[in-house]
Image (cartoon, rainbow, N blue to C red; front, side, top):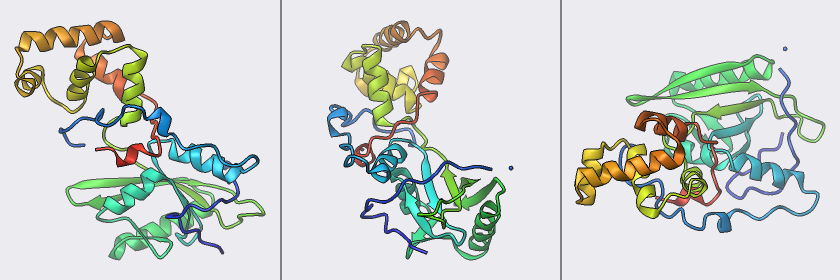
Length: 241
C-alpha cells in the first residue's frame, strides 16, 4: 500500500467515482482581487491525476481519499487546513488519527465504508463538532487501496473567491461589496454604520442598492442567496485573511 505525502502533492493517477449498493469579523473579500489570475495552471497534457487534484482543490469542502486503514491517499486543500486546525482530527505519519475512543470510532467507520456502507461520524471538537460523511469507493487496478471518500463540513462562510465573483456578476461597487461582506459576517445595519462611521440611513441605502442588483426581497433573502453559492475554493484563497 502506497501512502502519498500530500504536502508535496506529487502527480498521481485519477481515482474512479464511487459506487455504493469565521466568526463574525473581518472581511471575506479581503485580498480577493485578481484571484482569477492566481488560479493554478492546468497539469501536463494527459495528467488526469493533476486535473483531479485541481477539481478537488476547487471545492470548498474538506475531501479525503483514504484506504481501509485510515491511510490518506489524497487530501484537498480545505481538508488539510481543517485537519491542521482541528482539535480532534489530524494527519499523523500519513494516516488520519484521533485521540482515544474517537480514534477507534474513526477506524471502525472507515472499515464500514470500505465494506460498502455509507455513514456519518460526529466528532466532538471542544464546544463545537466536526461532522464527517463517509462514502464508499471502488479502487482501480492502479490504486486498489482507495476505499472511501471522507467529506468534512464546509467552512463557515462563503469563500472569498465565491463572494468575489458573486459581487462581480452583480456589478456591485467596492462599497457595496464591503456592506455585503459585513452582512455575511453577521453585522447588523447599525453595527455596519458604526464601524464605517456613517449614518445608518447611508448603510440602508447601500443595502437597498445591493438588494436591487441581486433581486433580493429582503436581507434574509440576500443572505440565503449568498449561502447557496457554489463552494468554490481557489488554491490561493486558503491563505487569504
